[in-house]
Image (cartoon, rainbow, N blue to C red; front, side, top):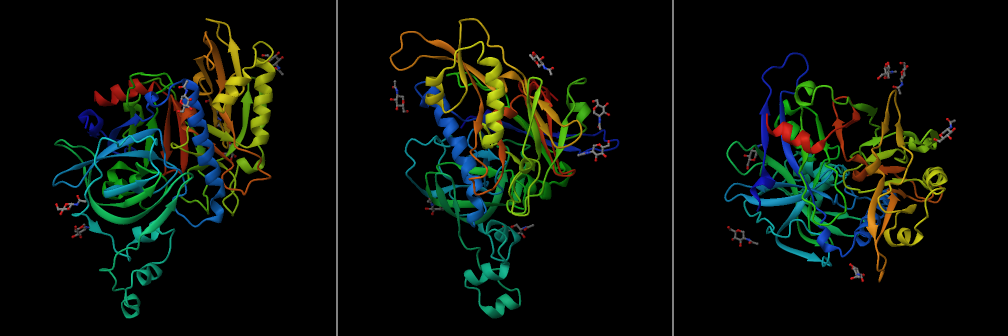
Length: 487
Ligand SMILES: *[C@@H]1O[C@H](CO)[C@@H](O)[C@H](O)[C@H]1NC(C)=O
Ligand SMILES: *[C@@H]1O[C@H](CO)[C@@H](O)[C@H](O)[C@H]1NC(C)=O
Ligand SMILES: *[C@@H]1O[C@H](CO)[C@@H](O)[C@H](O)[C@H]1NC(C)=O
Ligand SMILES: *[C@@H]1O[C@H](CO)[C@@H](O)[C@H](O)[C@H]1NC(C)=O
Ligand SMILES: *[C@@H]1O[C@H](CO)[C@@H](O)[C@H](O)[C@H]1NC(C)=O
Ligand SMILES: *[C@@H]1O[C@H](CO)[C@@H](O)[C@H](O)[C@H]1NC(C)=O
């Protein structure tokens, strides 16, 4: 395993005056899509857009299901850890703010129907958990993994006798296995605890009694997930309880990637905890734009925010009410998700944005319908060589004062060379990178929209649980990585 992939930076802030989280942990997020798996950009785009749609539709169907981890795992960005210490066993997991559990495959491991699935953990063997400790049915983590089922129920399932349940004496009975369904796969796992090391070398941080799910069999899920959602057993929650100095927040800054083949990628900084902001960020750099998190009674691990509208150039399209709030059934709002690639909008808003966009761009440039069919994105336009397509700015207006985020051009318009099947010459083409999530009237409810990681690139996105808000600030993420590392 690449040792730089496990690089860890642990920093102490000695000069705490007023507010100071005093410590922070810097971890590298790796972009996991391997373009070599795809023979052309449009196949990669198609696969990515289909995955975003599948995950979104699965999130919306949830209210008919009783699973606590409903999402297709957060593909795209990965984190590496070591499990146990004799010997340390490397694991690579998808980083996912849309779910709340850390789970991974354990030996012996069988992955059914996993051929052709991207697998960033391909070169590491599933860890042997023979030295890990089984979590008790009485543990709050067991309840959390079982969608808040009561300890008494879980201990009864674990065959703890009634008199022991009544006297709360079931510690030696293990937490029953649980089932998770995803958009395109599923698994059965059990809870264990063991030491999780966030660095292999000396100076590493060892999280003792770290709770995780262990799966010996999955359907279509070759790679585990590090859940960063809200909730007791998510990675940041366990870190915060282990190391309260880290404070109750984390942020990441996704280095812009493109779907170009063979590009060397800088790791994206994942920052857990934060010392004084002003010391760590370039002076004079952008301030955060914040919007409040909205509680979601049905999906408490989601980071939901409210969206008021979207501007295309100087024209602002208001979002329907359901996007600015979450009702008591858990419907509505926008989920900020590291595990979905492209932003999904309800049909009415999406269609208005596209109409406005096309009204400006389509007047000048030829529509590339063939590319739209091939990529699942749109609208797409051809442009002449070396001539940039002029496009209007796109601004997201979140609930709150001063809570508007202007998207950088490359976050919503992707330009690439397209050569259709058998075409002799490639043409410049550009596509709007937002997706239609479908008609809200026909849907079963669930989240109204998802803010995908593609639209979060080039921003530091902070999940501030202390103040219950999500913030966005424009950054050079690669420089931020270098800067934080050089401290
Ligand atoms: C590219 O790969 C896709 C599936 O990954 C396949 O359907 C398609 O035929 C391939 N195209 C070429 C030109 O090889
Ligand atoms: C795990 O390790 C134990 C002891 O080291 C060994 O007995 C067992 O066979 C191993 N299990 C697997 C699945 O490799
Ligand atoms: C951690 O696990 C060990 C057993 O491996 C146990 O003795 C200890 O009490 C646990 N600590 C906490 C804080 O749960
Ligand atoms: C909006 O922008 C377009 C083109 O940039 C311009 O023609 C139009 O007058 C503007 N409308 C308003 C109300 O400012
Ligand atoms: C916006 O600011 C006004 C006054 O400055 C305040 O009354 C209002 O509650 C704020 N709204 C939000 C959503 O923060
Ligand atoms: C919005 O931001 C501007 C400048 O950044 C500031 O002057 C203004 O007071 C802010 N308004 C609110 C309600 O926070």
